[in-house]
Every structure is written in structure tokens, then in C-alpha cells.
Image 1: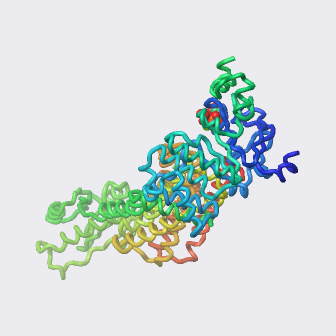
Image 2: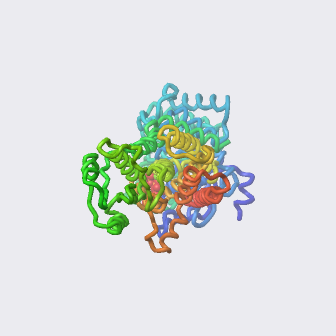
Length: 248
Length: 344
Ligand SMILES: Nc1ncnc2c1ncn2[C@@H]1O[C@H](COP(=O)(O)OP(=O)(O)OP(=O)(O)O)[C@@H](O)[C@H]1O
Ligand SMILES: [Mg+2]
């Protein structure tokens, strides 16, 4: 189909008529969307609307029941592509007996980082999430926010072309959140494509474009200002409520 | 290499969780030691049937702690013996004591013999030189075996199997329940690499465990060892491998540690029954054949061949092959079971 040829030249994410069913329950219905290179694309939607499910399909962790997903022109799931994707799960998947350093070293080795490069990258990402002083601590002694930050650090380790972040800033304080967002913008300016899910409106404002998901359907896509305009709302929150069916 | 990093991670996790490490390595030793204590102890009061023997011998047998019962004829005593009501029957023929032992339990036989010998050599009896040595017969078994020798090899197999099964299974399960397995599916780690990493990572500790158990059983507990140590080691190791691969495979069908525990009565206990600790001769033939699908049956058979019968590679290779084949099948099935998480 068209994805095969066109997306070859055009990096980014393409989701084409994707359905996802778990048994008989249909969780995603005919989702078509596109994330262009260098974009920061935000997925907004109520709890249970299917954001995580969609994001997992794009990260190649599951297969769509129908339809196609392309990342940088490669049909997902694809093992080689996974080296170019940095994924941060909604719930932290860390080895709690191990120290942060051991966790980082493990995930770094899985994506092919070794030796001096690995050491340097580990230092850089831990500096970024402000955890450099806690490298040697076991994860079991980390707070919730610290675990979130470590998960983010792991996603950033191998400088992936594509960052897929599932609610990255939950449990992170405003100061740190700002510095993380600064870094995300830097990354996107230097060519990283970023797809994230969020419930925080001021974060949604910062995205290049937003996708609104409700009941497994993509009900609107556009820049934050466009979404506000088309619903006649002053704030993004109002727009969200309109799309969410709470306000008419 | 990805498998190597997985192995390294597993080793590190183990060193952070020293208690589990200790359980896997020391618990089998502790239990073996306890069993050795129980079956090498000497507090048993043997039941002896006396057929027409001098009154003073009966009294001194009694004094030595035996439970003596008189029988009118040899046939009656032998009958009681075969019904396992007695441990031994004593009669005199032409002044020579005849001792018939039930014999299936070596430690009881030993107790009886020690006791009878003591009584017959007492000064109240005729001088030892005049006394003919007793004639000893066994109904079952033989003279040189101890019970621990008899089922020790099976126990080595059972404990090596049990602890590795449980610990490897739970570790793999934890990878599922904490979401790290799913997270790994967002990395280029292949399914076979995942399984291989676990086999080698845990294999390292399994190897340490196998060496320790084998050394402890032979070197410290002094279990009968007629074969070569290397064979003992390779059987133990392969058996543990089977436990490791089976444990990780079955963890796919458990949703919690508690459910993993539920595999003990289903997977472990039947194997113990069929491994030779208990006689299955009274079982229906078709049920006896169930043992052919049980890893522990092959492991125990090979261990007995090596330790008791002193046999070499030519006798145990079929068992080793079966264990190896089972491990490979379990690994392949596990790679397949991981399809649930990622098809590629
Ligand atoms: N493995 C699964 N099996 C069955 N149903 C599932 C599975 N995973 C998700 N679902 C269902 O799919 C729907 C969407 O779930 P999803 O996790 O994608 O929501 P979400 O938008 O990420 O929600 P939240 O904002 O709370 O994280 C939910 O109704 C959920 O129950
Ligand atoms: Mg979610």
C-alpha cells in the first residue's frame, strides 16, 4: 500500500486503518494518524480510551488486529527498528533488586551500547533526569518519581530517532518537568520524532500537534490552537471537554 | 552480545538476593543432612521372633531393647516375617543360631544384627570359641547396603530438581508480573535470546548447586559411591537443566508466585512418587508407564546406576539423552510460549 513507498523517503510514524481487539473487545477502531519527523505529537484522551494500546502498537510490542503501522517507513513490528525507538512504559518496568547503574547497563547492552560510549551516555542521561547522585542505589529504594525519571533515562540512552513516551511526566515535579520538556524540545529540534501521551493540559499546549482519542477512535487531530479554534474554546482544557463529550 | 548482558543481569540479581541464592544452594544440603541423620540413627527397637531358643537369650535380647515374641515353629515365624510383622526370626539348629532377616530396610537389618551379635557373645553363653557363628539369611535385600545408600541418589535428584524448578520458575514469572518482560519486547532482544539467557544465567548457579550437592552427599555424608564423580556431576547438572527449563516454561501458565507454588503438587510430588523412593510395583502397569514422561525418573535411574551399581557412561547415556532432549523441548516450547508477548 502507499505506506510501503512513500514512507520510505519520509521518516516519522504512519498508522493506517488500525484496529486492535483483545478477544472480542475492540479497543482501537480504525485509527489513522501520522507523526511527522521532528514533531512532538501528543495523544490526549480519557483513561481507558486506548492511548497505551496505540503506543504499544507503534513501539512494536504488539501487532494490530487490522491495518498497518510504519515507523520510518518500516512495517512494525520489526526487530531491527526497535534499535531506533526509545520507549518509556506507563508503568515502570525496572529490576528492583538491581541498582540504577545495573539497570541502565542492562538496557544499554540490549540496544547495542558498550564500553566507553555506554558509560558516557549513562552519565549524560542521568544528569539530565537529575539522578546522577543515585546511580549506585538499588531501585527498591527509589521514590515513584525517581523511577519515572530513570525509565525516561533508559528510553533516551541510545539517542533513538523515535521517542515513544507513555505519560512521561507523571509524578515529576514542575522544576524537573520543565527541564525535561526543554530537553525534549532540543531533541526534536535535532531531529528526534517524539510521540507521547499525557493528561496534563499545559504539557499538551507544548506539543506541535495533538491527537484526541475517545473510545478507541481518533476524533480530532491538529495543533493546539487549531483544536481550540475549531471548538470555539478559550483553553485546551475546554476543547478537551468538548471532544470528550462533556461540553457541547 | 544481548544474551551475555541478560546473563550478567541475572547473575547480578542473584547477588543482590542472597537469600534466594542461599535457598537454592544450601537448602538441599540441609535437607540431605537431616535425612541422613534420620536414617543413620540407631534408636530403633527391632521386633524379633524367637523359635525355641534358650530362655536366657530371650531375656538378654529383651534387655538390649528388642521386642521379642515366641513362635512355636519356624514356619510360623517366617510367615510373620514375610508379613512384615517381624524384622528377624531366630532359631537354633544343631546348636548353630540361624537368623533370617526381613532385609528390605537396611538400617533395621543392621540394628538386628548388632543386637543379636551382642547377646550371643555375652559371657553367660558358652565361650565364643565353642559357639558356631550364626547363619544369616536375608528374605530381601543384602548385607552391605544402608538405607541412605539406597535412596540417597534419588534424593540428590529430587532436591536438585525441586529448588531449581521453583526458583527459576518464580524468577521468570517475576519478569512477567513486574512488566519487565513486556518492556524487553520493546528492545531488540529476541525470544530465543531471552530463553537462552535464562538457561545460561541460571545454569551458572545450577552448576554450583550441582557440584555442592554431589560433593556434600559423597564427601561429607559418605553416601555410597561406586561410580565416577564426573558422571554423578553430569547427571545432576542435566537434571537441574531440565528443572530450569521446565520451571521457566510452566511459569507462563502462572499469574503469581502463589500459582507457581501450585505446580509443586502437580509437577514435583508425582515425580517423587515415581522416582524410585517408593515402590510402584503394586501399581497398574499403565500407570507405572507414567514415569516415562518424568525427568526425575531418568535422573534417579542414572544416579542409582552411577552411585550404587558403579556403572559408567555406557549405562547412563540413554538417561542423559532423554534429559537433554527434554530440556531442549522445554526451551523450544518456552520460545514458542513467549509469542504471547511478541510474534517475532
Ligand atoms: N491486554 C489487554 N486485554 C484486554 N483488554 C485490554 C488489554 N490492554 C488494554 N485493554 C483494554 O483496552 C482499553 C484501553 O486501554 P489503554 O491502556 O490503552 O488505555 P489508556 O488510554 O492508556 O488509559 P490510561 O490513560 O488510564 O493509561 C481499556 O478498556 C483496557 O481495559
Ligand atoms: Mg495508558
